Image (cartoon, rainbow, N blue to C red; front, side, top):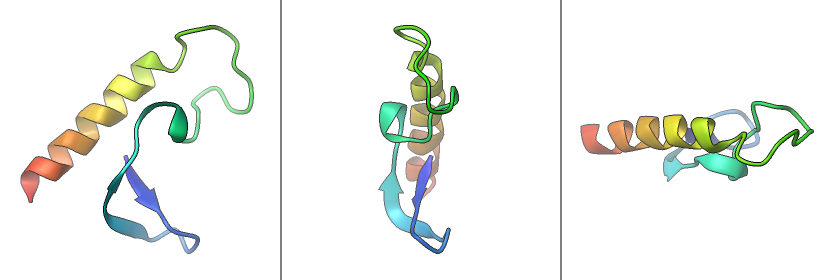
Length: 53
C-alpha cells in the first residue's frame, strides 16, 4: 500500500489504495466493482501501517 518512487524505494507517509494502484487485473477492467476487494485490502494495510507510527 506504500507508494514507491522511480527507484522502487518507499515514499515516507504516502500510501495508495483502489484504482490508483497497480490493478490486480492488469491492464484490463473485466467487470465493474472488480477492484473493490483490492481497494479494501490495501486501504486496511495502509491504515495499519499509518497507526504503527
